[in-house]
Image 1 (cartoon, rainbow, N blue to C red):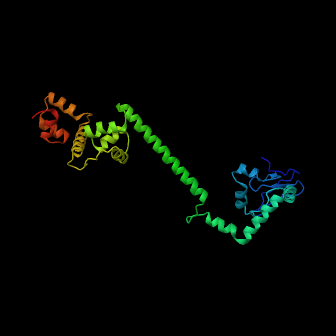
Image 2 (cartoon, one colour; image 1 turned 120 degrees about the vertical axis):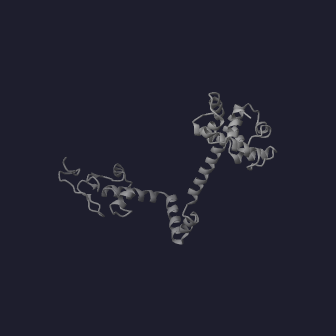
Image 3 (cartoon, helix red, strand yellow; image 1 turned 30 degrees about the vertical axis):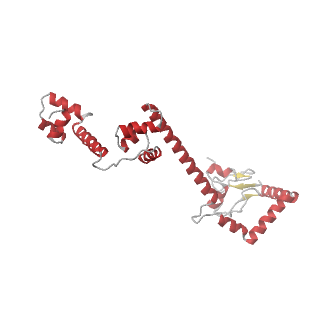
Length: 265
């Protein structure tokens, strides 16, 4: 592959040294540090190399104010800016106001007042708050939709009826009721309070606590023998001739526990 050449001649160009921008005055171009090719302006070209103009200047040690264009193009742009400045009274007024604010320190004060102690600007804090609020609203809508679906699936007309049937009349625990209604425990407690239903104690010796222990024991025994329903498994083995002691050893439970599960006294 032949080396890169300038737009105006056959001489190969070298990559500019760090901290130096090379302009080809004959071809009226400027040389890219990365690929060695020449262009009238590097501002758009450097995107091909994954860089912005500011990143390109920093990468190759150029001044932040260094134009990345051929001399004639820089002069054209400078002249155009001067013409706009001369022709626009409004622009001159804005620039004069900006200079006055800079000299008086007002710009610095405004920058500091718009920045939190952690360096976060007001706009960024506002965007973050809006994002968090939007997320909360979305989660609330999703939770309400799940509750509505659960009420419909259970055949309940409203939340109050569901709470009375499941929690009060069904004597289900907070956890069990929350699972039926597809809500969290805290949300369920809020709903109970809103509908004037007292929350039962949930200690170890409460009805809910005892039922929870029974379920845990049944589940542990079923997992030990690889059964889905421990009662069905026990009755099947007992019908096949297994003794209570053998079943107790297999499940890791007591003989009275096995007897209660298969209905023997």
